[in-house]
Amino acid sequence: MLAGHIARRVLLLIALKLLLSAYPHFHLGHLRLFGVLTRIALCYGLVALLYMATRKSLPLFAVTCGILLGWWLMLCAIPIPGLGLPGHDVPLFDPQANLAAWLDRIVSDWTLRTLHTGVLYEKTWDPEGLLGTLPACASVLAGVLAGQAFRNRSLPAQRRPLLFLAAGIVNLAVGLGWGMAMPINKALWSSSFVLVTSGAALLMLAAFDWAFDIRRVQDSSRVAFRTLLFLRVFGTNAIVAFLLSGFVVKTLMLFPAPSGTEHSAYAWLYMRLFAFWVPSPDLASFLFALAFMVAMALPLAALYRRNIVIRL
Image 1 (cartoon, rainbow, N blue to C red):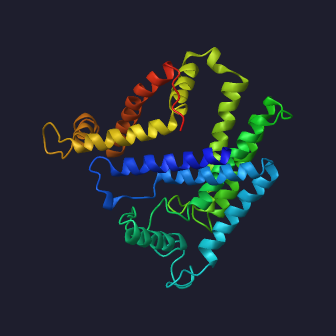
Image 2: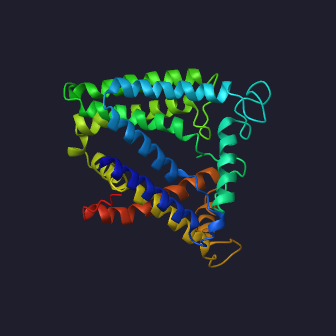
Image 3: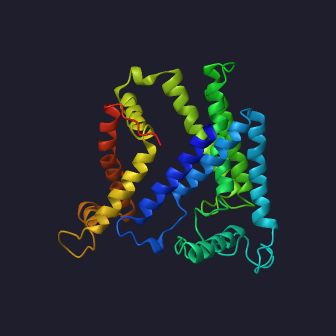
């Protein structure tokens, strides 16, 4: 029964991804099957099934280490069909000449022939391609292992932040060291990238666990209370936030600009409200992203106030 629920949720996430990709023109022949929601769905499904098989931390940790080492060997030591050995016949971690990109093209060619759709984000490869799901599962498992600490009743709550702090430092150190041989690369979701990002997340978790769960600073500080509230607003409906932002951006890009030379309402908002007034393009882009995030928080806050959590 639980496996059926997992499968239903995986399929629903993929369906929502396809809907977002098709919107607003619904040119079904140009759908991108891969993407963030597809990766979330596949990683969730695989890790959930693994967690059903074993909930013990040691086997889960061993699987995580095996994935990271195996991914490193796959990218560095397995010959790419038709291209040769990475680091010898083709440059190591070349965007188009690596095992993940090769499989992306195989899958895309098959879906285009059979389903008449399934383009890649970068034409010849996809940053959320199929093979990259494997190391992304290691990132999910890092979160599962952190969650095990909260479920461990024999671990005093006061020691949890120290455990997260130590694990974060180790992850960062190993990831940065490994990055000298295997670059910290998001597109390939390299093993060093997994360790560095997981380490940073663990350090943040240590700080938040200490501040909000142990010290409960939100009870005495209005700023801390509102910060925690803002995070809860997004966290309780995270998938809704992702979908809402995607649909809003695509809708704004669909409508023409009310005036000026901008091609869409989205570009008009950025140029007229931010880029025109802020001399630094980087700062203007950051402020625009910040304003957009605040705008997305408004409907999510309405859901939060009504205690509405949309579960898939």
